[in-house]
Image (cartoon, rainbow, N blue to C red; front, side, top):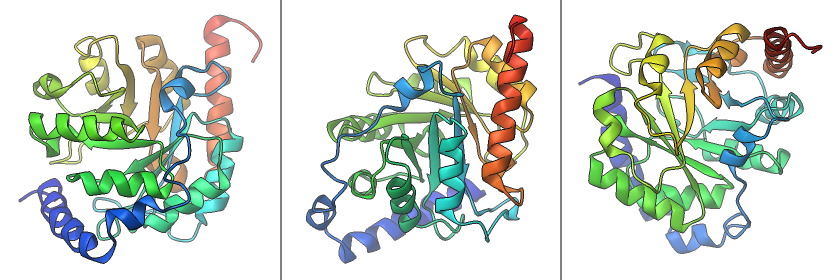
Length: 272
């Protein structure tokens, strides 16, 4: 059993336990549940934003502890100040050391920035939970879900006014895409081997229907890579570890974003 299979198997057990602890009715009474959600799609297409979805990530199964000292509010407020298009917040505790409380903190300190709940979603309960935490967007990983199940979860998410980011890893997963999906992300990291290759995004770009917003995920560590991927047609870029592995993730994000702007300006031969 590879790491993704282990995570998904555990997630079914974890969600079953949470259902007994907190009812959906209780989740629906959250102060965030009825708030109007923000559009990550619109933010990614906004020319005044960077197209970057910056992640708050403490730990991963492959890299172990990445950053366990930075405060979620300090980091994510810095991300917003840097002009990111969205913030991704990991809420898985067992494998990534994230918490639901992290997402609530992100929401409280970034009221006008779209927030993605980065989670291994297998059940509608997690979508209700995401809405109650203040998320605007949810992640569905095609590798984890059969076609019908992914379609059911995407439709339910849309009924909650949540946008849907579906992550794919291969062309074989393209038939799973449905009209209830807003954004398609190509993960450059093989979740079975954890090998990263940016070329993977380029290879899949033209196979993804054009009515989806297309983003590239994982392994983006240099501003020139974003300039290159933008030229290829990508509209968004999820960056997980590159900022978090520094002593000051907010500053790293600001410097990275400024370097992207400078790179794009050079490409167009205009002042940055």
